[in-house]
Image (cartoon, rainbow, N blue to C red; front, side, top):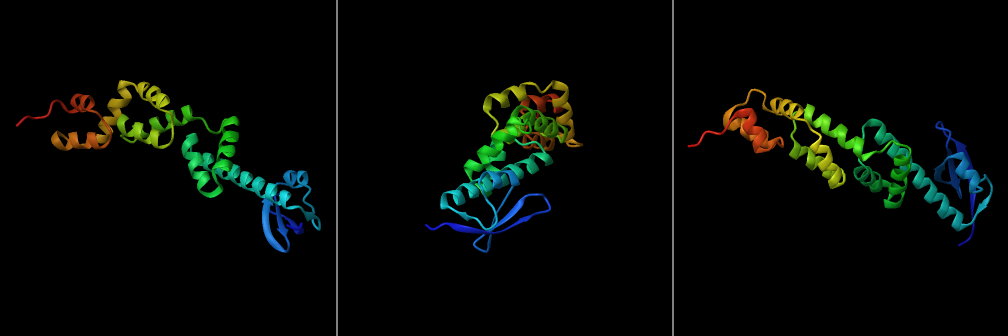
Length: 195
């Protein structure tokens, strides 16, 4: 394949470079990466450099997307990788999450603790929390540790929030639906009526 030509480079509002190749919009890169790859206006670019630049652009986009996502709320590694991979591919997603983890922006233990506290506050029980953590890709051992750290007072408060004014069979159904086990339901409601 013949070399291609960089026909324009424009600085965007975010200080990154929008680069045209053969007169068509091509990629957006940070200036340091563009300089490292030797991307200058009017310069011919070998196909290997084109592929490398496209890979770099994908990794940068994945990192920026990951940073925006963790800026809104905490994420576990697994769920963040899945969200980024949908758009940027597995390799770029893994690299972005690795970098965000190194920076301390992604931490499964912190995410598990935050999600658990939030769910308890909203009246959800341990079974639902376990499900949500597993769905986020948190390791089973960390899930068990996190759930073991829920103290009885927090659990009771969450159960009372879930119950509201419900009693009897309706209360039992509500607690089960919200992820509370039988022992918690018995403590909050007493034993069910037989008959």
